[in-house]
Image (spheres, rainbow, N blue to C red):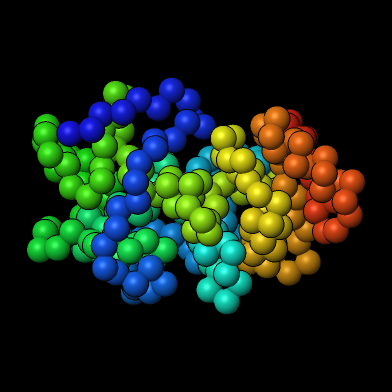
Length: 236
């Protein structure tokens, strides 16, 4: 059994991709994975917020297939259901359903789970864990595959982050350890702005030194994002 320690919110486990024979471009959308795919309105966004009733409201998201416009998708995660981005991947796999973007084989012939807590209860005390799941020293279960596909695959499969809304202002952050390439950031921004209510203007907030350097280059270089960069602590 692998036990790992995540020393900060921006430190992700390194590991090989969990590989199977599933078509990573296929996705069973009939399965309710507690995400919202595509265009979203204010009411739906607020219903998914991790901090209901507070302002700014914020919701975790990920963009999949960021480098492929024809199949690129945006998914918002229900904040009442998920605490961490990777839980989406292993919730699907543990329920016998493929995880869009991954070729990993789902767990077959097992029981079906209604929640993350139900899966964790089943795994509690087990020495051998299914899939590539690892138990951290803090007791959280994590799939290194999600973070491998998000941060170490080429082309990049997932771009995870958090969307914020205060009134009619929208902005997003990526993970603090995400040394995102300009091309992926521009593509993710376009995908995200495209699913917000019509007429919305979306900003990106840089939250690390590396991201701030990229923000400076964008501001100097022109283009859509040259006027859409925020610094740590700033809002539109």
